[in-house]
Length: 143
Image (cartoon, rainbow, N blue to C red; front, side, top):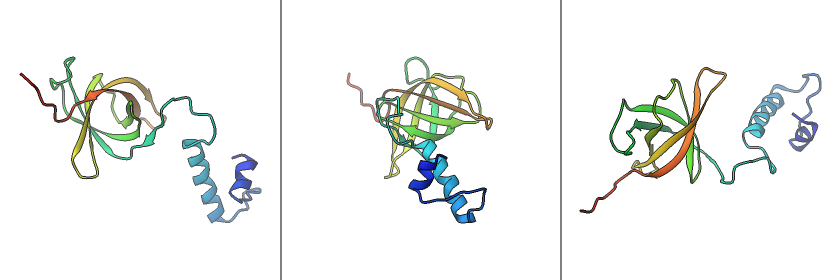
């Protein structure tokens, strides 16, 4: 952590001699500064928000409705107005999924998601994400 950040938080870490509480706070703040950097470092045009929720993914066919494979549960990472990202323990063999997230009122928000990127993490999990194609919940059809 830079001296500027240390001074900003009023911490003094010299040769590891800081009290345990200050060291703990320093580690947490260093972690948070990497997750939420200040300044114009964000390359995305849309704001992302943490999504600390379990998400159910139902793989679907090219029509966006026909279920394929089994329902998967993944761990949410971020959401924006155009898409979301999540962590999962196994590779995903499908590109189109219906992502279902529980809302505050316990109803579910459902989106057709085009999963267009994936990377392997150093902890043995995968991080993936994609763009929303359309809302997938409560569609009414007209004849």
